[in-house]
Structure formats: C-alpha cells, structure tokens
Length: 101
Image (cartoon, rainbow, N blue to C red):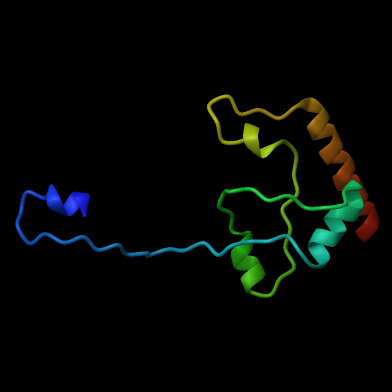
C-alpha cells in the first residue's frame, strides 16, 4: 500500500510473481540416519538457507546435507572452516567409504 501511494503514476499496480521456488527440505529417512550413525550424532539440525536438496527429496530420493564447518561461519565475508572440522569430515568420508565398499 505504501509503495502504491508513492507511485508517480495514478492507477499503478504491483504484482508479485514467483518464477522459481525452492522446496523445503527436512533431513529424514535413510540418508539422514546414515549420516547420524557415521557422525555419532543423535539429531539433525535446521538452518535457514536454500539448497537443492529439497528438489531431490521431492523426487523421492533419501537426501541429507552433511559437511564440515558451521553454518554461521558460511557465506560471510570472513568465511572459514577450522582445520579440525576438515579432519573430522575426512574421517566421516573414510567411515562412509568403509561402510559402503
């Protein structure tokens, strides 16, 4: 309403068009259970960012996001991952390979 009131042209209108939507994603199912088991965690966490994982999940694939670092450090001007986080992730990948090969 405020934008329309300030419009320089009488009769202006605003239309909101969603031309791309990212489906919500929730870690559950076999992939999430596998990641929890291989990381010795008991619960998943939630974060407010966009990922393609929801598309895979909507297509019927068991999907999980699992990687090094903390989301509060990601995608910032001073983004970084601690060396210890990388070492822990390498150990996770070794357990994943051992579990499946």
